[in-house]
Image 1 (tube, rainbow, N blue to C red):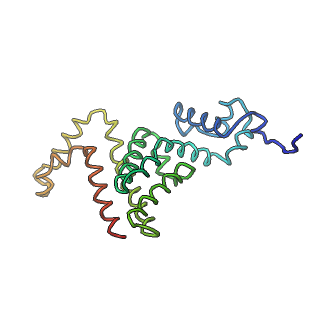
Image 2 (image 1 turned 60 degrees about the horizontal axis):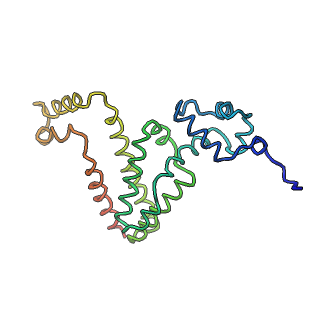
Image 3 (image 1 turned 90 degrees about the vertical axis):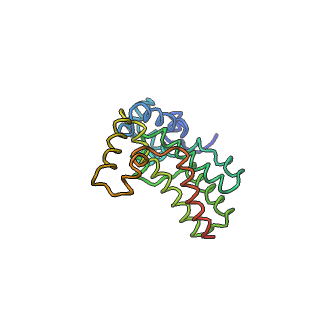
Length: 217
């Protein structure tokens, strides 16, 4: 007979995977504000100590849920591509994923991303940069630049996706940009400035950023 003592979570028949699954479901149904160890324990029908066998605290629970969102980004596929193409693919997929889960953005942008999926994607990005000849501190700076650009585009685009009357917003912006008091270049480009960027604009601008990163090698 094994002499290994089981913790409360083991005795309750819980696994880390089950805790994560329930936390994701709870967050989707009720939002991050309701995600607490006590609330999750009640949902699973166990004592809070059973949850603490698998996560240290609420912060670790939130980190685990956020990290799980990144599971759908296929790093292995990116690694099969040419480096530039693979980096564009990773950033594009991450952007699409975050826009699909815009409700988690306040949590995501207020804390560092950590967990196995975040580490996997970070490793894939650094490997692709290394294949471009960008390594060491330059690669770390390049990674940060790519994430800043991608997350920034998400932060700007997410509110537009839920705008109840985008046409009215565009019209008001165009009127402001083309007012008599507007500078000449702003007025000349009023219509383009008022409209949200096309999807292709993200990839084109990302390509410019990658060109600059590549020159650091």
